[in-house]
Image 1 (cartoon, rainbow, N blue to C red):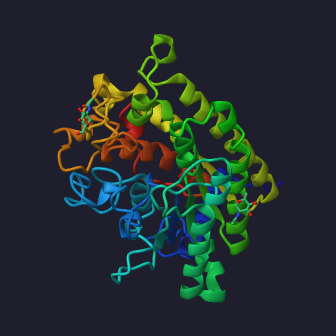
Image 2 (image 1 turned 60 degrees about the vertical axis):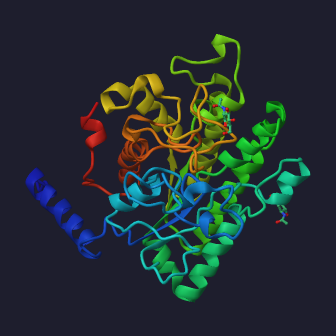
Amino acid sequence: MASISLPNFSFFLLLITLSFYSSCDALTKCCITSLFQLGDSIADAGNVIRIPGASLLARAYGPPYGETFFNKPTGRFSDGRIIADYIASSLNLPFLNAYLDKSGVSFSQGVNFAVAGATAMNTSFLAERNVGVVPYNVPLPTQLEWLKSHLQSTCGIHCKPTLRNSLIVLGEFGGVDYWNSFSQNKAETEIRTYVPFIIDGILNAVRELIQLGSTRILVPGVFPFGCLSAYLTRFPDTNPNAYDQYGCLRSYNRFATYHNIELKRALENIQCEFPHINIVYGDYYGAFRTIFRFAPWLGFNPSTLVSACCGGGGRYNFNFSAGCGSPSVSACPNPAQYVNWDGLHLTDEAYRRISNIIINNMLPKFGCYGFGDSSVLSSY
Ligand SMILES: *[C@@H]1O[C@H](CO)[C@@H](O)[C@H](O)[C@H]1NC(C)=O
Ligand SMILES: *[C@@H]1O[C@H](CO)[C@@H](O)[C@H](O)[C@H]1NC(C)=O
């Protein structure tokens, strides 16, 4: 009786693995040769600061933004890197340049289309519901048009191989739609009715990306809004039970969870429709909560978890009339001990920890094994 002995079988697997890797550039990770990022200020790496008239609202063009890592402001809403940068590094790719950067930078390994203030829904959808957006809004559908026009001008009809070997990070989206609605005093019951539209908008984008030839798409959920200094400052509650053990507002976290559950379910459905495409949910919420839970072990100061490092004073060091980047406002001396950077965005260190969790979860689901940085696991 012939039977396959275990060593032979392993050798066979090794051969398969070797032939799989040898078909790609040895420097790339599992054949991902480019990265495309869409999103809002959580992922913006220099688009909004290049939109005329936007700079007053988006102060990331000035110090102390970028002080920790780049030693200068880059348009990222952080003291350093953002999740998009950590994802790029995990794939051995360079940091993505901003689409609107026309100074001759390279886009050969991807493009960042994310713009601060970007909504998932278009401006007219929100206007019909009396939700104002920034005048230069570049919502998800417009960012998709940017992506298509970029592909048209670089690879034209030969884009399918480019997209097949790329990773698309779609979002997060929705964070701005919700913040604008809540901060413009919309009732939660009404804002809940936007959720199915927002999920649909994201799903339509996924479908379109697949039609263009994408095979790997990461779709992040939203952060726990109730843990952001801006929400905490805008919606103070006299009832102590409104807050959880970290000082986060439970109701806004519940809302974020509602969006995330709906998104995750929708992605599972669309995954069934396209079994050969990898559609992965990025659990930004869970990763954020994990770093809160392990804050003392990760070097974060537990007593300032919900306070901004860079802000104009007040209970949460967040002041709507004196935001980070304003002349009178300075950053804390130890940003790595803070999760919140400017009240709506996180520090380089918080993004690093969150990214480690997202990356370690994502790479195997995209068929990438032997990933390197597991420091977040070893630090628990
Ligand atoms: C805006 O979005 C809505 C809902 O997705 C859609 O029905 C409408 O056609 C869009 N309008 C524009 C101008 O793109
Ligand atoms: C917020 O900033 C304004 C303008 O600088 C200032 O007048 C006010 O006192 C600040 N509020 C707090 C709570 O620090």
